[in-house]
Amino acid sequence: MGRTAPSRRGVLLAVAAVPLAVACTTPEPTPLPPDALEELIRSARADAALAAAVGAPETATARTEHADRLAAEVYRATPRVPGSSVPPSAPPSVAPPAGATREGLVAALRTAQKQAADLVASVPAHRAGLVASVAAGCASLVEALS
Image 1: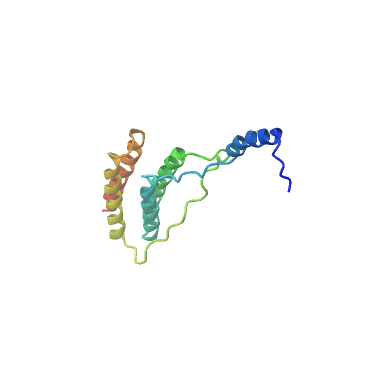
Image 2 (image 1 turned 60 degrees about the vertical axis):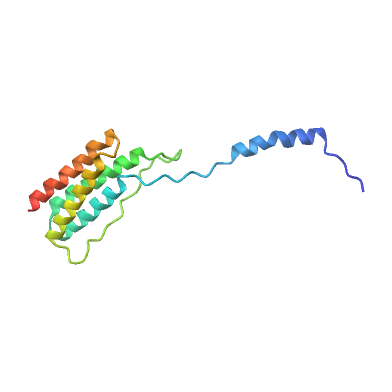
């Protein structure tokens, strides 16, 4: 049984192809931690649905605007995959809770105000103004509804 040794040329080609094979594989992307603003976005969308359910369209509009502005900041700060420049599609719809009341809306707005105010100190300076504006906006909506 004759075994033939690989040729010198075959060995050189195999060795030369290894770095190319390694370079052509893409590493698994590491998952990003959730953005600190995500919870504010969810609250704003839920409050907008609640406001619409209790007949407070101005409050619904304001909270939708809060959610949109926060989502735009999250999108701006999220690294993009090369070739994908399209922002996320329509935001998920949030159904208002059963038995929605104006008092429940005021309580939700107070909670959102506190949530945003607590977050201001922990976000970078370029986001602090946006988060503080959301907190102030919630405070003014509470005053308008009271």
